[in-house]
Image 1 (tube, helix red, strand yellow):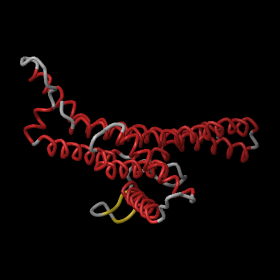
Image 2 (tube, helix red, strand yellow; image 1 turned 60 degrees about the vertical axis):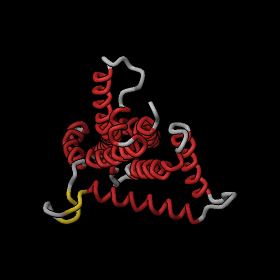
Image 3 (cartoon, helix red, strand yellow; image 1 turned 60 degrees about the horizontal axis):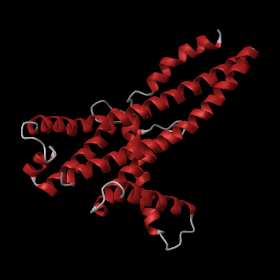
Image 4 (tube, helix red, strand yellow; image 1 turned 90 degrees about the vertical axis):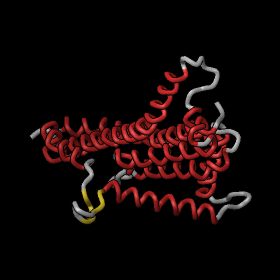
Length: 261
């Protein structure tokens, strides 16, 4: 059996590994692998924040604390003050929590044997819903219930255009719930699927080459390993960018909801 035949046999197993299999409990009451890893990432996020918060100093000397503080300042200055502007400080804890949880979840998924919670649509839906409810809450708080609905249509429009623009803006606001969830899920799931395929191909070609003394299969495993390393580097960048994009878009939506149009 050649390497391609072995690879084709293992592809369904790889695809199966991405399904939400129950790892604790049963179908009536149990945890799927993604829910379990979501809890683990939540605990990791909590530990990172608490440890960094307890050891903050005027002049940071610890690299870990310095990295966490830099991440917080990045969220505060770039996504908070830079996007929301006036009154941004009260939103920084929410934005920083989103950023660090998504970032840690994405990075955990890069560890072999681990799963990223953001690789399933249910978790990204939950994150999207939290963000949606948050900016709607602050929009209502800033303008009042009726005032927030009215603010969806920019002021200064011709009276005839107001109902049309208002309806389009309402649809656009609701669709944010979908776009936030699908963008994060799609990028993370696709990236980890590609990593899985490259890792599988590299291991299959190398294994077949050793077992069958097939020089061609052994040589072909080298470019697959090189591609795997490149994809790991690329996926690390994507993991950061997706946390950044999700948090920045949440900041934009908070700004749109609370500002006077």
